[in-house]
Length: 453
Image (tube, rainbow, N blue to C red):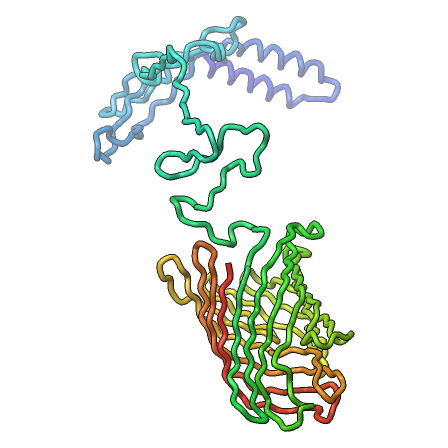
């Protein structure tokens, strides 16, 4: 039927177009409308795929494990793959020209039950664990109560806190001189009001002669700490020091060039090491006091000396220092101070600093005592005012250079000590006035040792 209608319409259109004129546009529209009404029923007819002799089955991989062969897929209408009969598409699932929506054209609802992806059940069968709330409140832990700061916790440890005291006490955590597990604290783990109380003895060998001189120095000092000096978070170390010098020589027939048997040094040393920024700081060491034999006390008996340097931290292990060292001696007033501090590891410290370098290395541990060995150097001597018979009061300098090696140790209780020996050379004896301006002394050996706590 569709074929007959289509040929008739094509014939009529062809005949009419032969005599087509611009004034016949209304007749063309009427003929096209009649043709559409004639074929409207044909659009709703079922479409049947023409039969062909070419066999084109649809296949899929086998369903068995390890099977890679192709298996024909069953199609609607039951095609006969042996004869090559075509497949019918079947009845449409919905009518596109229907006035009322049917079930096939209704969009799925988000509120309805989902399709059953797991087979017969609409939802998967989850075995959810059940939890029952506790029927009683949890047990509250209890802690032992120590009635006084002198009571310790079991096993020898100390409790972290004590029962509040009324009125407040000076030591809320008790006076505890032991660290964890009973190990004593290092002295550096806390800041005491007084520290580094020290006794140091120094001996320079000498014989009888005009160029020989033997000295014995006994030094007693301590350090007072003033915390957070100038709001720098660094303490000011105040160290009162007293030294007695015993001199023997040089021997000379002229009493005007001889030295007294004793001289004294009584001074106050101040040291402050502020950090101006995390990378830049300073090290200020200043001393002032009286240096005399106490038979002569003039303006020159007072001396002011010290060192001031800036410190720049280049890396976590390397810092550079530079500044001035002021001696206030008659012969030498000042010279530059500079160097590098290198701490490559906790067991090594290289303070390559002029005029007092020191290279230290950890050696061993004996019991609870750490032992280090070191090499050091310094510009030694000093300046004093002295009185001698038959001459005016005068000022004398003793200058020398010392290079030595030593051992130092630190106990866990905070007790520290050292012993060292050094070679002393370039020794000079300089007078401020008199008949001799400068005299040389022979090289010698120095022994020095001390204790600090």
